[in-house]
Amino acid sequence: MIALYCIGGIVALILVAIILGASYEIVASQRARAKFADASGELVTINNRKLHLNIMGERRAGQPVVILESSVGANSLDWQLVQPTIAEHAQVISYDRAGNGWSEQASSPRTPQAIVTDLHDALQSAGVEPPYLMVGHRYGGLYVRKYQEHFPDDVIGLVLVDSSHPDVFEDDSSSEINRLQMNVNVFQRVGIVRYVTRNNQRVTLLPDNRRAEYAAMMMHDNRNLLPEARHILENGIELPATIDIPLIVVSRAEEDDIARERRWAEYQRDFLALSSDSKHIHTETSKSWILFAEPQTISNAILDLLNDLTPSSEDTK
Image (tube, rainbow, N blue to C red; front, side, top):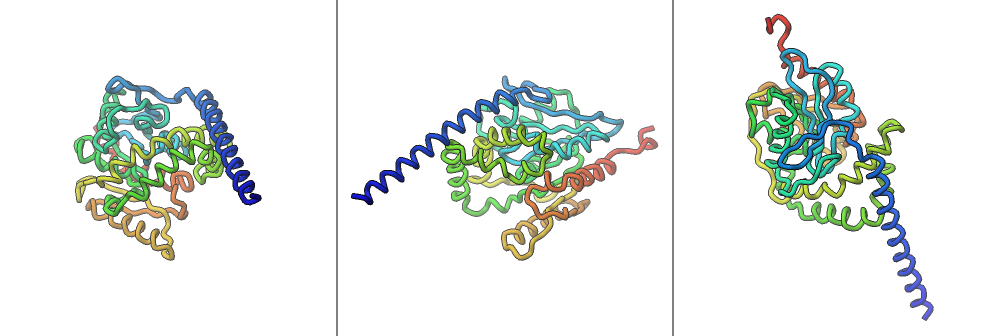
């Protein structure tokens, strides 16, 4: 009998914790949505919905525009430590894919083709003409390669920032899909994800005055992570074996004692074979989100390629 009372008490405590967590999540989500409702950039219309572009800097004669592509479940704020540095020298654009950040949801599945078509239409709607120097982080590296495949005349250079590799998705991804479903459908609903996000590596590497907005948008985008990743997780992604434009690969420092990291490092080296004009740069940090841990290294790599792709004043005469 005592054991039954104990079990009943434990169950009651769990239910109370779930109810309190769910209530906390609802209230916190509503407050964050209200506080950070206004987009800092430009909203352009494509296919009867709004897509958010954050356009910074001025385009100089002969320059390509730098286009920044985030990973899945991420948004334009991921580039907030990199973009201002680039903007001192060129026009640079980060943006939010459908459903992320301040962009409206799309009704169509989030296939790589749909994603790159959205970006192409948004750039055209905003009057941003090619050529582009495209920069992609993690999954974003796959997307910029897909963009270059579909719009080859628009892209004259690529920077892959710790990019995901297509071969990663050849293995069974069902466990990753289940993990993401549990994350959104259970842990986020009861407030656990929001609580953990406060100490997320990306958040803690930001200045104090930028953390609240970024954490709020992380929570907003978390529910969109699986819809974006699912198509690639289930079907993989096919990309050209080679490209005929300059390429810079920026990778995090290698940790040889961890098998998973050794494999990731091998994939990063494999990217060099994509182009006959390629260069590999390693960050000093081994943190997985190098956009936040070492933004200056990434900015320098982008600017180096930008300078190489920009004709000199003598060439433009």
